[in-house]
Length: 113
Image (cartoon, rainbow, N blue to C red):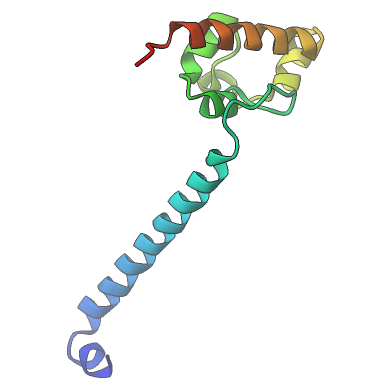
């Protein structure tokens, strides 16, 4: 190792940076896989964002936004359902019902293998 460092310091530094970046993304993928494996089809809660719900149910967040009339993340950022309800001046339970109805609709439209 010392010989490699002495003879090719730039190439060895590049290798260490590339290995570090690879390790970072490998750990990130593993953590994400473990997390989402235990969070499939979660019941909708006020603290959730549309993106979180879409990941949990394997749905397209843009379709959920479109069918429920929720604000798009590009317009307002990822708002939680309770923030959306507060901005609309309605109860969060009404928003949750809309999202649950949309999930049921999108689930029924999925192609069964």
